[in-house]
Length: 484
Ligand SMILES: NC(=O)C1=CN([C@@H]2O[C@H](COP(=O)(O)OP(=O)(O)OC[C@H]3O[C@@H](n4cnc5c(N)ncnc54)[C@H](OP(=O)(O)O)[C@@H]3O)[C@@H](O)[C@H]2O)[C@@H](O)CC1
Ligand SMILES: Nc1ncnc2c1ncn2[C@@H]1O[C@H](COP(=O)(O)OP(=O)(O)O)[C@@H](O)[C@H]1O
Ligand SMILES: [K+]
Image (tube, rainbow, N blue to C red; front, side, top):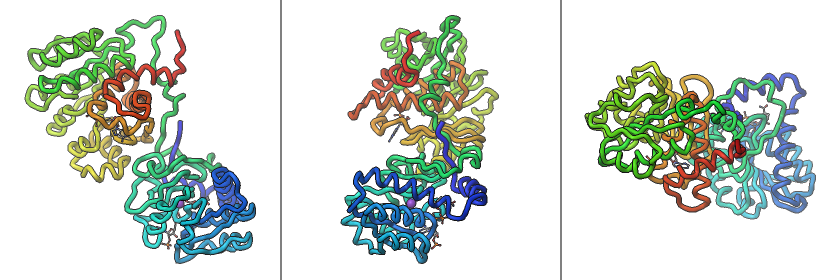
């Protein structure tokens, strides 16, 4: 499990650790790790030009001491001092090793730029001259190594207000920061390298986690000798309408590929014909009225993709939500719930899978605000609605009212095409039906969906149906594909 922490959590742990060590020890550990990554990136250090962007805090101190180490190995090291004050001991050390103070024009001829403008101590958008230096560094040809956090990215949320460094590598100290795992910040970090400064034993429970391949392999249900289609888990899918038939086909496809023992599809005539012809494996009930009475027993429901938002859909949603099994609500199901919150009054678990626009409709928050601070909005919605929230987008986040938020970044931007969300609801629904909690079904579902998207795309456009087809390959990639 990958873990990440807020700036306050890191500060708290550093405070305890620092009290046990001689002054300056942590910064030297940080600088040593940072210099090692820079040296690796440069290949040959001797004679290379390294420009340090130095802010007024300890982030700048890290950069200066790393510059000192590189200068001692023969690099030309020039520090651009951006702040009203500078880490004096770090600057003296740099000078003593042959480094110097330069102005921003040195960025043009740099072989490597170290971004030590601000780290976890930043407050709000970058001020001048920091903002201009961040933009000049981005425009320079040299790769940027960010110290701790790319300057301009909020370490605790991933929020970016105004200018921000776009790093090739981010060398983060002691523990990963939340903002490095969540967009828009995550898209600024490049590769994240962790430097161990001894913080581990002092860290609290993480703010955010991300499942690894092994975690997902451990959570995914596998059939055993005693399994049969009912025991493996039956998923009901209430989706599609005479106007939108594709959503039903895609949700059922995702579910069938993700290991449901059986999928029961329930809907009106047109999608019934489509689902039957695409998926002979599904057990299909044509609904003449909005009722699930004749559908048969299921262990979980997917409700909403392509369902429509009229009275018929509302009645069907009310029936599904009146059942005593977990329900995943997506797409039109979310619109129905936005118009009638009372539908959520139930005791069995609910997982909602909105994109930012759908969450905005549900909570009244502004879509742009949700996209800027995905974690806070997903958490707030989970608490307000009493449900598990899977917020879709370039970083998918899964939040409950308490405990760490799980983030997933296995996806690819090729997934931003119509219908891929329907496939995700089928995958996560199948995992719910197989007995996973909403939290695990959502986070494993997002992991598999993202990976299936990558496998389907291979650098070229994909269709939603391709994503469903690639789910077994994604599961094989995760579990090692043991034949049993
Ligand atoms: N603690 C430890 O044990 C260890 C810490 N380590 C390192 O220290 C870093 C944290 O250092 P920190 O606390 O000094 O804060 P930091 O990120 O340098 O920024 C604060 C300065 O930025 C400025 N500033 C703020 N907002 C701004 C804005 N919007 N736009 C422009 N400027 C702004 C503000 O300046 P002022 O307003 O005072 O002029 C303030 O002085 C951490 O990320 C890691 O790299 C490692 O060495 C490992 C051990
Ligand atoms: N830029 C992106 N990077 C990675 N994944 C993305 C990106 N944009 C969208 N996705 C994923 O694609 C899917 C789109 O779902 P959704 O918006 O519901 O589409 P639809 O309603 O057409 O099915 C989600 O799983 C989302 O996380
Ligand atoms: K930085």
